[in-house]
Image 1 (spheres, rainbow, N blue to C red):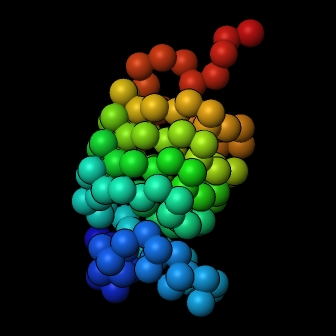
Image 2: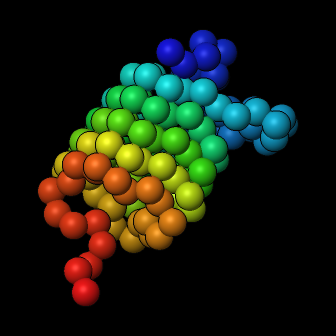
Image 3: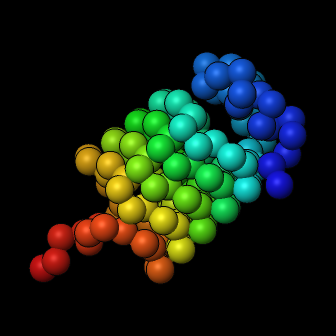
Length: 124
């Protein structure tokens, strides 16, 4: 379950969320199992966030910083992930079917057991 304090701040909007994290950079956001389906998280600072088993179906995550985030078994069906920052992100077992990953650089991400409509990397 997500830490209620973290979830409550995110519900106030991305600007408030980013400001909160900027003021206390030691925080590691815990949004595990959170229902963020359809949420607008454009430009959200989710660096090293725990998003394991989170529901992010149809969420807008364009330009979000997901570097080091833990998205194991997260549901990202139909999510928009254009231009996300992902360095060392773990999405093992995540459901990315129908997700828009245009211009997303997935190099360094753990992609084991990911469910996707098409290959996430070009076949060489």
